[in-house]
Amino acid sequence: MFKVLISDTMSNVAQKIFEKNKISVDVKTGLSEEEIIKIISDYDGMVVRSATKVTKNIILAAKKLKVIARAGAGVDNIDVPAAKEHNMLVMNTPGGNTNATAEHAFALIMAVLRKIPYANDTTHKGKWEKKNIKGTELSKKTLGIVGFGNVGVRLSHLVKGFGVNILVNSKSLESRQKDFPHVKNVSFDKLISTSDIISFHCKAAKDGKPLITREHYKKIKPTAYIINTARGNIVDEKDLNAALNENLLAGAAIDVYSKEPAKENILFNNTKTILTPHVAASTKEASIVVAEMAASQITNFLLKGTKINTV
Image 1 (cartoon, rainbow, N blue to C red):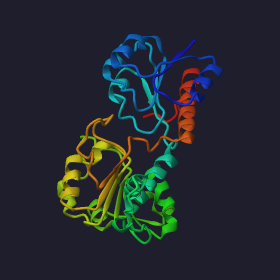
Image 2 (image 1 turned 90 degrees about the vertical axis):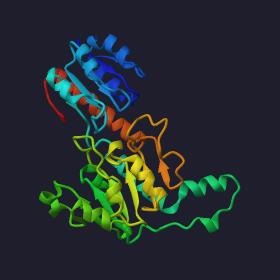
Image 3 (image 1 turned 30 degrees about the vertical axis):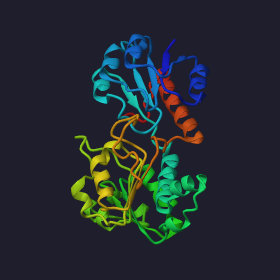
């Protein structure tokens, strides 16, 4: 009998799928790297979300492990090269949390434009800051979307009703442009210098360097806002903090960080930022979808050899 480890908290639909297919499953969450290393040799498959870091040391200790599934799109928390070197398949679940992430990005856009967190906080405290809270409308603004995969595409549709001018920076869009007549593909410099809101929905650079640094802020409108629900190292947080303090841009809303969990960060207490703890993909609906996808993919691979959404 095959045996699978679920090492992160997720919908119990995953466990039910394994049990239904006569695959033994253990749910052990919150384990340290050392604790996983001690038990991983017992398992043929492993399901993770973002909390578990599947390191090279874990992979080296996994004598039976055949497949690792990420219940989510990003696989930054898995040492993919090490896994491939040891003939382990790595899968993800693209599309499972697309709508959740896009909706969160949209929510951040509206929250930062209308200063919702500040308005809420001060009103709860009995302050009536009406004269100090003047928002900005999304209508007729230019939204720059960096990266045009599932999430970027979904966001572009969510803002349609606001009469937004949508610019995109994407290498792959050229071949798909006919399917998206409502957006225009431009260079990165053109996008950041023209947009009122810049929202990142791309992969991190392979060398780990941020895509936007201090030099870029000189090209951005001082009235612009930055939104990041993609990867933490896309935006250099020190440069972003400095740019905000120097009034080189109006504000930022960030869901992902260079180091997570973010117990300390230079952006903390910057009043021009809205910060959320990597929850863009965390909805009840998305958690069920990605858990079901991950469990089904591992089940099909172990029982039938079927490879779906391999990385």
